[in-house]
Image (cartoon, rainbow, N blue to C red; front, side):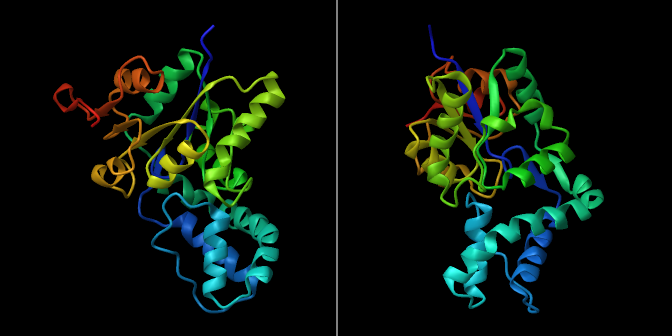
Length: 252
């Protein structure tokens, strides 16, 4: 029998984007300031796309002159504070999260086909669950099979974590694992874990930047549900997909 397909979705920039309110970022930085007992404002790194929450937190704390060992020791408390801060502004988070075009339709189409969907995200698991709940997408994914920034600070180590969870639940990890994300780091983590890499140009990286990292397929967005499903389930060749028929061309 053909192994089943398991789709691992990134969250920020792939499924949802901020409407500009920076609600999550502000909560993130407030939690860091509190856990490190800092009064000065902290900068959020510009090169954060595809990094895990704890990787970013560590970089911010070290940039504030904390010793790395001390900063690492603060991360467990940071997890709790970040969730608390974000839950406290839940009423602001809901309107700030914009579900990207075609996402809901793609998730529904895959669910109708019985495809297992979960997450591979730099978000802490609790934060990913809160964001998808606020966006109305939580019912589409199996959170227990996913891999998160709370599992490992290095994103390239996350696909093997999902494989282990598949083994624990099903007794086998024999599955076609597909990673869908919007950054070069999503592509790199798929490669490191032996998974297919599907890039979507819906985040902060243009298609040319994503193409340079040779994903198995590149989509402008998720609006063409039929083409998206065919690509994820490998029912068509690797494609460079736009939203219209004229935009399709083989990746070279």
